[in-house]
Image (cartoon, rainbow, N blue to C red; front, side, top):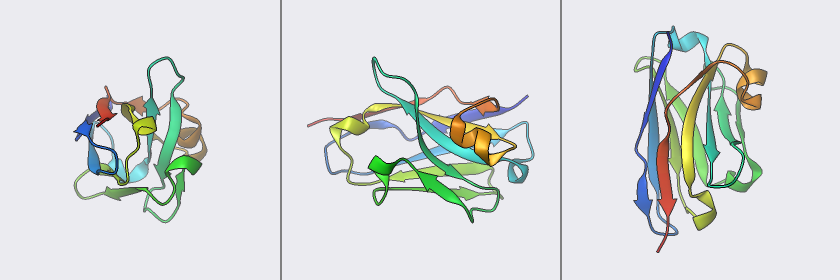
Length: 123
């Protein structure tokens, strides 16, 4: 059974930075594409970023391009989301997502999900 555990969320001022981590178990991590999604109060869950098996392919939500960076360490079974220049609109619960096909990870279909970590951007 796939387990994804996110960490690194918290309260940060606008313009600040956070790094989210997601540790995976119950799967051969290097065989899975990984992604990050977020859900703000009263809104639907939305795609934030995805990374392919070896990190060659990465995609981002337009509003986070240039501010967020997704990366992975296959030796540590971990995917990261480095977030900089944070804005109040980035406030949400951030979820880690795994899947065997890149297109389904980007679409947020199937695969495994973590329990989420809260990110709050406020002064």
